[in-house]
Amino acid sequence: MNRILKDYDSGKVPGFGWNAGAGLAYRIKQTLIGVNFSLSTSSKNDNTMNTGDFTLYVSTNAIRTGGLIFSPQLGVGTQSTTFTVQKKNLNGEFGDFLTTQSNQTKMEHDAAIVDLSITLKTSDTERTKLRPECRVGYKSSITKNEWKVANAAISNAPEDRLGHFYVQLAWGIGR
Image: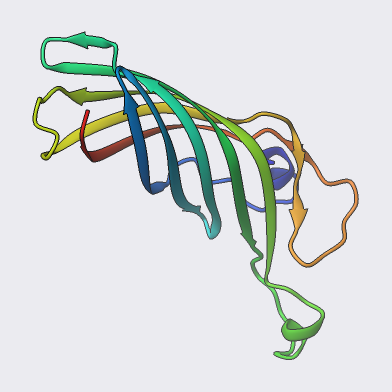
């Protein structure tokens, strides 16, 4: 996508953004089975990317050292991304922008994803306290899917496999 944007002098896909999410898990001995939901947003030079994903995951608390737990996690799910390109230096009548001319293009990409991560947690026998956690991971589309332009029928759409590294700081209850 960045190559195509560069060819048309339309900026870049943002490389850094903000993320918020929530998750819920059930622990069976050292294994956790859960769900995560997250929303991300980022922008660069008027181009904006928003992503939402939902994953089901399995994790383990078996790796312990002192008061720390290293919890590897494997998740699969779905991801929906919208990318908005702002067009610059346009001229025209006000009505033109309501009917035939646009000042932005909104693209969409949906894909099945895999999420590989490791979470660092503190060990505590009381399960009623909020404790900090840090997760580092990588999410990637499983297959290359075509980009779509919102409200338009297009041909020759580029295929892309989206992927990104992430760091999440969180608060959790339980172990």
